[in-house]
Picture (cartoon, rainbow, N blue to C red):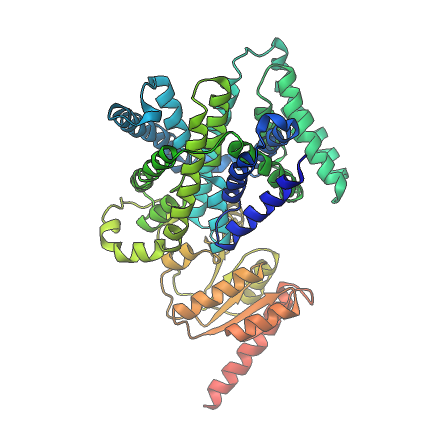
Length: 533
């Protein structure tokens, strides 16, 4: 393989990353540069093989993170389906009109080709959305979960297209694949025994490429579908997140090859760039449609606008769809380049839009809130705290122990906050006062009602970043009571104390009861000081 491929790709990726954009834009640019230097896709068969592996592992990774329950929510499955339909109904006539007025790449396209282009443009970027959510720490926010759920549904639509595009009827032996769920206990036993190092990576690749892609291909089904199904089968295992992390860099590296192959198909003309720019001008329609649909499903205006902006771009899956359509001869190959350029420009536009979404929401707050529907979605209603004296953020093992100790020592109202609904249900059944919410989520603090009698907040969340964020939000709300927190590392303790936490407790020294004993001593000291005064 040409050494220039590695050097140019690396430099382009670094340059794009330096300005805060996803490196994939740099990889597309690298493909165009390599094409200028005379390197073409057909001359490097290995590159196409690696590109195919990247797409396969991408779908496997999506399956590993798939929470089927989240897809059953109306705002996710119905919202994504209606948006797909609405986007196609919008894009097809627009593209037809642009063709009628003489735009070269659209002249003479048939209805089925316009439908394919519209289908590709209807997707939003999983890569971009996840990057933005990771940077803001809002991946567990309601708007983040809704956006990711919609993206997964879009990915499933793309996989169905890829499967249908294969064009061959599956073998009768494909019925044997229904045995895979029955093999799940056996696969899980192997999963338990592979450890945590290179064996885990090898297991993941075997599941994705052999049990998934190869097996499905052998019976006449799309290999990518097999990878997705295997990922879904493994998603319920305790080590599924660890497996997803272990194959992450393999997936990302092979996807670099995919983006390079796009650029190696040829350079965009000035007309292609102009048409791509026109397509980007249509993105506000995607935002408006997402907002209308999400408020239709009774989400708050803030949740709806944040999710809509997160989805305001074109997608790498749209590129995959276009690549398959171009390979099959269903679309002119130039459209692969046009969609690639539109994708890149959409990222350039979406980055500042997402950075300013909160200012936009505040500026048009009254108009946006007028679009809300009552009653609000159960997960998006204001959180009524009641009149607690103690608030515990995080009701895991430590938080649960803290709650029980406080309950045994003080005749006062205690409120626990937990983001996992199954844990909330468990605590409610045990008689504890717990509500659902995620204190590491800006939405939680936006919905939280004031509790004037609150004296102490106990930060019992397992992640330092979440605890630190909670302290910042408590300050913003002008909370005047005491704050105690648990930490795993001494450097975290220093950061929390500097942020304004009154007492920090090391989680490795004891569990919930010890934490509360420590807190109770402080309360006694406070009470004694107050009595003297």
